[in-house]
Length: 538
Image 1: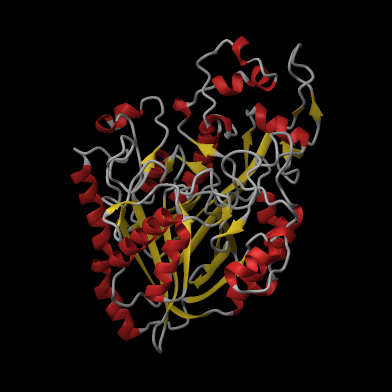
Image 2 (image 1 turned 135 degrees about the vertical axis):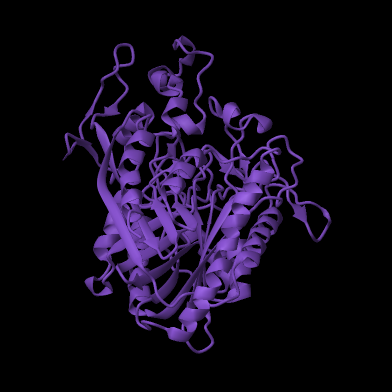
């Protein structure tokens, strides 16, 4: 069932989410019984961590110290190229720090770590490096490294350098992040303590004003309508968005029962500052986390969900409570208002009763998941070393770093990486009544909803997008438009007018930043069996 978003369907969506929001209240009686019986006081243990991963270059060291009152330790060369929009956007200052925020959860079934990074994306090879650096003493069975996909931090992929043919990556910074995240996981695992856990689900409906033609009042807008989307959501001209806010909160057991961590899962690109901003920031998640930590203490962790194609804040208006007027778009005040209103919606949804002191935990992963690399732009940038050269391509399962010139004349001077596949991974896990899918892509919410439907019996569902990799957009295969990829040699040679699809070439980011039309079927074929396996039991 597709996610209903149109005005006539709003009641149905509200009812569906209202039922989901009521589920924690149904569980409070069992929680109260657990409070009294405490059947196995050692079954659920939790540790948390947070580490500063703000890029600091020599020219910005004084700006860092002025902004945060702490000694700057340089971890990045000059300049810092900012990711997510165009080339040559150079950082000039700091609004807030970027973080690695993590939690380690140990229950009956294993020990998992979830770490969220304030970066645009992090490739699977870097995640494997982090895993190799985590101490064996940490005893973690499954590590998830997620990127919030914020667009106001350093280039960690390579395609946002000073020009289209030059990488924006600083590998010393990636090495710093890898070591920092590994230390964060070690710290969390070393600090495990008896804990309780509870879940909630709410939504962002009504947080935006609905004044923009793209804004349906859902607190997030769909910026790219695909083929046949109008058949799924005719009243909104095909705009489809996921307003779900899924929440996990972990608290101490005994004593003051202080909150250890509050994790929020929401499907919206953190890009509200837009392309004109040059101050490092984690965008609206920063303000949401600040408000949650003001309310609860502990560590607030933001996890982006199925935010692909194209869920985001750029086309919505929100009411500034200080002025009674819409907050000015592309400003830090807008990000603050939006982040705080999301946090307030979360606060209103979390049950006040204690959580459960036990956790039934199960997880499953598939690695590698090979996906044919159809994107000739990616092949071009890999051949030039623009995309992270630590990204390995494979042919018949064997690493293949060969480069050639496969286009026919007159395009036979354009280099292409020749390996057949990229290799990624997928995962899934369950904790009590909640289910999580770990997906390496920017996932269309239509597909996210199919994964949630497979989580049979789960009262709360989470999609961890950009989990353990960043392979670009994932959209339903029938909605693929091949014109951008088919016209690649003409576009790379600056003669797009000679391509057969001209002038109807769709090189929107959805198609240009996409491994290819095999992403959805291959990821789905790998992850759905994992979800099914975790939901076969009682």
